[in-house]
Amino acid sequence: MTRETTTPSARQTELLDAAYRYALEHGLADLSLRPLAAAIGSSPRVLMFLFGNKDGLVRALLAKARCDELAMLDRLGQAAGAEPIGLTAAVERVWEWLAAEEHRPLLRLWTEAYARSLVEPDGAWAGFARSTVDDWLAVLAACQPQPEKDSEAGAVRRTAALAVLRGALLDLLATDDRQRVTAAVRHQLASLSADAEQ
Image 1 (tube, one colour):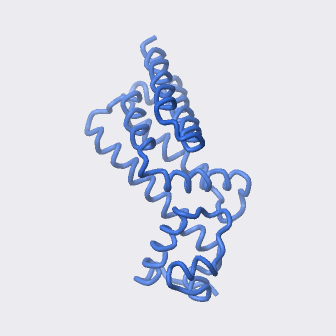
Image 2 (cartoon, one colour):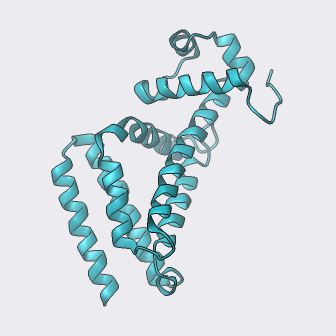
């Protein structure tokens, strides 16, 4: 039975927030409703009623993770102000945020969801990876001056910048070697800047 409402109830929001904190700590790969419900002061039956099933809860958790990601990207856009800050400055700001220790739980969850979306494209994870690529490319495009943003070379540069960020993030999560990975990001930024000047 799926609850048909357009606005989540206070209880649903409260349980989703608690489940999200749980997922940030434990991940989603082996999520089981019984231990989750016990940890957040609910029951599997209540979670089923509020979210329909486990996939419904996973979709709600992924939507919340994407919302957090979009909030970060929105802050980047606001920091840019009226004038585009340029791709290099945008990547530097994004990397500072990604490399911060306090964001690791969200980024591990994001990485897990991204990978699951690729191997389970029709399940609860459907579309997550593609949506995040589109989100990030849109923000990076907004940081480029108009002539660059609208050019084929501009699209290639922001795709390369996103690839650098994603690869560096995976390396950082795997090794926790912030100094080495940050040096590599800066090296690639220098290459991106040199390409833009040619």
